[in-house]
Amino acid sequence: MTIEAATWMYVAIEKTGPSEQIVGQTDTEHDISFIPAFLSKEDAQQAMFHLHLEKKRKYEVQAIIYEDLARHAVDGGFLIFVLDADGNVVERLPAPLKPG
Image (cartoon, rainbow, N blue to C red; front, side):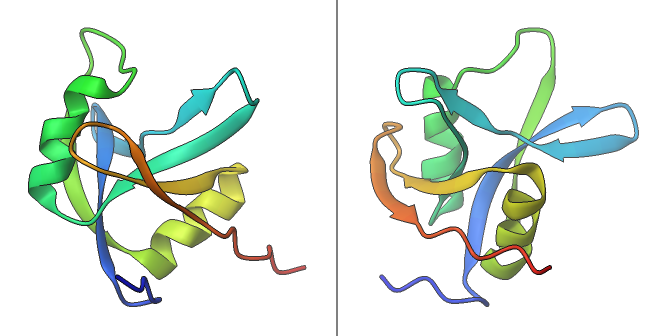
């Protein structure tokens, strides 16, 4: 599947009171920070069990357009990895250049 600017993706969101934050992960072996993204809500919900999430925090899956997700990733210094339901990397999306 080709992921374009208007492609809907699914991400884990950490809910902290009234605010929400996209969940990022760190591959310590390769020193890479990334946002796990999914092509279906079902895959995202299944993969939540494979993500490193803090206990006692609330998380939910939400849809986001790739263009917006990419903006968040660049602003936070993250790459975007598309994962499958088992938490395996399917595709590493190229990081868009930060405008400047």
